[in-house]
Amino acid sequence: DGGITQSPKYLFRKEGQNVTLSCEQNLNHDAMYWYRQDPGQGLRLIYYSQIVNDFQKGDIAEGYSVSREKKESFPLTVTSAQKNPTAFYLCASSTQGLADTYEQYFGPGTRLTVT
Amino acid sequence: KNQVEQSPQSLIILEGKNCTLQCNYTVSPFSNLRWYKQDTGRGPVSLTIMTFSENTKSNGRYTATLDADTKQSSLHITASQLSDSASYICVVNAGNNRKLIWGLGTSLAVNP
Image (cartoon, rainbow over all chains, first blue to last red; front, top):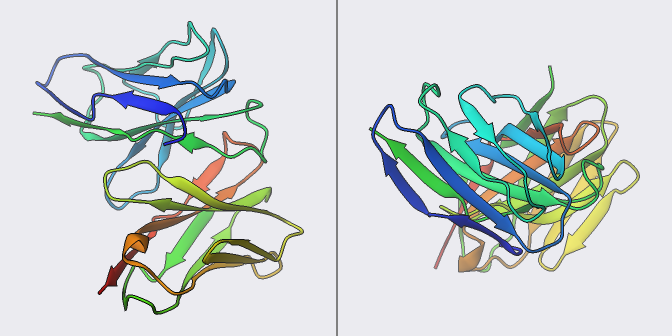
């Protein structure tokens, strides 16, 4: 998993509760990303960060929030405003920001189930 | 509309056999094409990254080809092993890592 850790692996929450997913990397990468993966769909970008204290919305940011206070950490909060939060969440990182030739390294993922 | 289509959707082969997975894309602009392997319940792992000028790239028993004119790529797996059972995802980069277009993947099962 390339030095990226996500915790927990499985997470269960009641509808209406906010929940924070952890992502830590020790690769000294500048850029970090959050994706969600649903059956029958390709990965979709939620948020990305090119550098500490900066982050941008991806394609499906509604109902999510992030912070990037440290280079190593990029936690994702799934808020109660997210209408369909049950999914497999993947964190990734890459060196040199968004430069197109730098591959992304993924964490092991967190499977969130909201009932 | 930027799209990446993969075929077949799923494939079953016997251990030791070869197989080829296909990827067709309609993505513009085109920067590079990537193949990832994703084990069930795990994060994707990069197999290859191919730029416009590269036709073939190998990574052990995995060989990827790219035809930028026809916008097609293939991933060939030689002498398959049980550990090759996974989903193989084709991803096209439309300019930078913010603009990755992900395919749905081909689910490969290698049986003994």
